[in-house]
Amino acid sequence: AQSVTQLDSHVSVSEGTPVLLRCNYSSSYSPSLFWYVQHPNKGLQLLLKYTSAATLVKGINGFEAEFKKSETSFHLTKPSAHMSDAAEYFCVVSELKTSYDKVIFGPGTSLSVIP
Amino acid sequence: EPEVTQTPSHQVTQMGQEVILRCVPISNHLYFYWYRQILGQKVEFLVSFYNNEISEKSEIFDDQFSVERPDGSNFTLKIRSTKLEDSAMYFCASSVIETQYFGPGTRLLVL
Image (cartoon, rainbow over all chains, first blue to last red; front, side, top):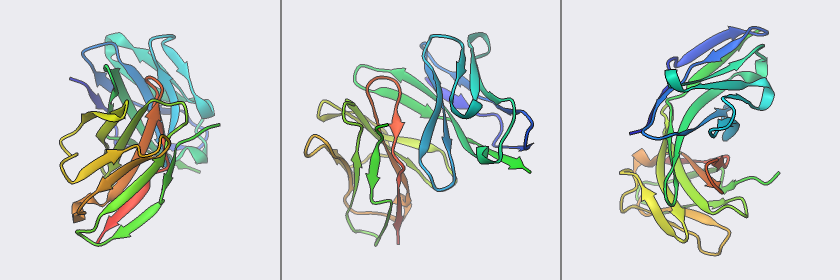
């Protein structure tokens, strides 16, 4: 069975410092992994995705994530936080079934950026 | 860039009333989904729809809920008799394969 764990419910960083949002997953098969961001009162925006190609994935707004199969992790990083990065971040695991993608959301990590 | 759209953005209704939430998926997408997010909680899968039929549904998606694609472009979620606990943000998503693109959501408040 699939599951997603986001180890930190809340992360706070200073502007200009690195961001690390942690995600661990379990899946019976080779999953696809995603990070989505949700700004206050907004929808879910795709940041980046891993679908069995390169293990280091680059996304929008300077974010990247590394798929580590041995650690079942897909942590999200950014070298330098910006005020506009403050949002809720969701790690998502997906398995392709015959007629749909079975998607499980992690509980989310709220990122605060301190000026 | 094409995107998923949802209407209305906000809906307030009385308990027991029927509501219809509307979504226009990205035009060449084949798979359609509804999710909900109760305030402060995680995003939960409701239902997936492919080839004009439900392909999977969660335990949340009981007989009060239904989906349809009436005209080949819109994708609707109907809640027949709303309950207080149906208050949530409802997201529509669509995909070609693997990557789901989400709409901005409809915030439903049941009084």
